[in-house]
Length: 174
Image (cartoon, rainbow, N blue to C red; front, side, top):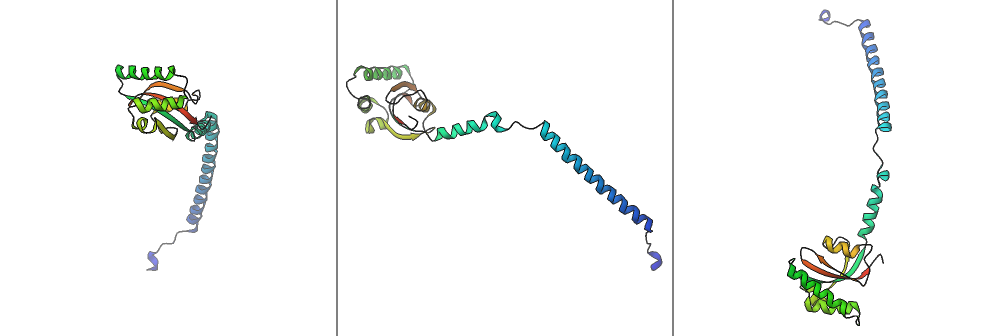
């Protein structure tokens, strides 16, 4: 049985070890080359940092706008046809004519009389306090626009619900 087992000569074991060390050194060189390549790639083909693009500034501005709150009242005339538009313009003229009363009181009385919205009849058109992006976009743009002033009637504003006249009572940034 012993005659059947062949023992490899020492020379081949040395060859095996040396080829293995060659592979390891080649692998280490390859790793070094790959890491160097990665560093060069990052240096020459990097992405523009978000700060340079203004992404962080945009995100900060968006989050700060989320914290805005407002109180407003509105008068709604349902429908988007010419008759509804004419009716809301007539209401707007009536609000502008009488300057003796406080605009908020006059607006609440008009909302209770002519608004098609349940809040108009029950609360004088008051929508209470609400945050940015919680109303339809057209309404939101008027209430939270930086040029909009408290105590001024804006409109008519057309939305999917109809035409609105909007009175801003309070805003957290003013």
